Length: 262
Image (cartoon, rainbow, N blue to C red; front, side, top):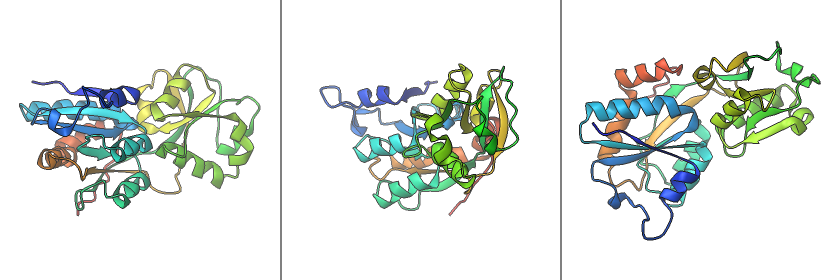
C-alpha cells in the first residue's frame, strides 16, 4: 500500500517551484493525484487519503494543506492540483468565477462549528463574546479574514456583537486555523477562534469556552479543478469522500454531514 504524501504552505510552493524539478501533472505518476484541502481538514483527510489508497491499490494521493485562500492562489497560479476542498463557499465561488473548477463537479460534503478556545489550564470563563472586553484578555488569535474562512466567520461574529473595532488592537492574525490552534495550545495567546473539529484535535491542551452561532452556515465544498488531467481519478476520490465510509471518517473527527448532491 502506498502512503499519502503530505505538503503544507511553503513546502508545497517549493515542491512546485519553477526550475529543473518543476512538477507538472504529467510529471506525477499516472495513478497519483494532488488534493489541496483546507487546513482544518488535515487530520480527517490524512485518514481519508490512507483509506482511499487502501481501497484502491496502486492509486496515490498527494495532500496539500493550507488556508483556503492560499490554496486558491496556488491553483490560480498553475499549481497542478486535481481536487480542491475549501472551508467555505466564498472561496469556492471565486474558484468557480475564475473557471478553476470543473462545472458540475462541486459538492458540499461537510459542516463545522465556530468556537472560542483557551489554553486548557486557563481560568477564563466567558458566557458571551462581549466578555472579550475584559482586561484579562490581551491577545486573541484569529486567522486572517482576508484569505482564511475561519477568520471571516470570526470577523462576522465580532462585527455582529459590535466588538470588531474595539478589540482589533488585540487580534493576532494567523495564516490558517491550525496556527491559531497551536498559538492557543502553547499559551502564546489568551483565546483564539477555531473550528470545533480543531479543538477536538487538541482537547488535552485547549478547552472550548463557547460555541458561536455563525452568520452563515459553515459548509465545506469540494470540486475537481478545471486543469486536472486526471479528472476521472479526481472524481473517484470525491466519490469516496461523500460515500458512507468517507462520511464516517469525517464524522469521527467532528464534522457534520452537509451533502448536497446535484
